[in-house]
Length: 176
Figure 1 (tube, rainbow, N blue to C red):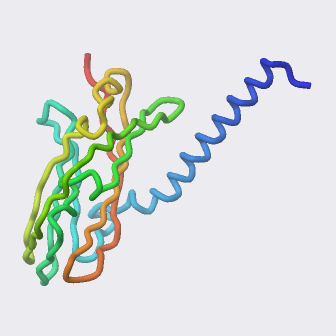
Figure 2 (figure 1 turned 60 degrees about the vertical axis):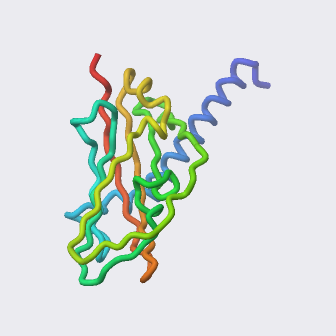
Figure 3 (figure 1 turned 30 degrees about the vertical axis):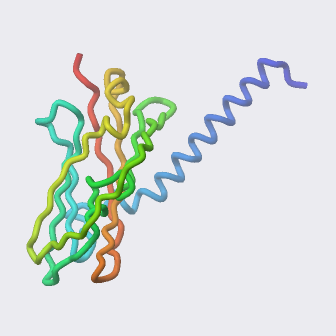
């Protein structure tokens, strides 16, 4: 028979196992996405660059999407990664022993109406200020660095969806 202390210990082991299992599963599903940079080969016909903007006071993602193909791409304006929280998948994890996921705000957002066209050779750029989606981010960054995982897929109105691409970025701990 287990004592109360042993029972608690077993629960902690089970919780640690579940977190490890979830993170392992996330790695399996995200690993193919992490190689979507230029060296590994971007999705055919679409280049997506994501970087952390060092010049911004608040942690900010900079997106650059370019169209190297010979056709114009037409899409809903709301499908740009910076247009809505629903157009891109972002997940943040503290670099701590428990790999704590930082909660994402789920605001009610009116959809951006209209469409846009990106001609051959065209480039679109935009930014996402991360603390507007992750309210606790600045507080977490005072304690430790954060790993951001992203995944994006543009779905043109005039053709099939581009392959999903993604990756990860390290957001360093804030200097005191």
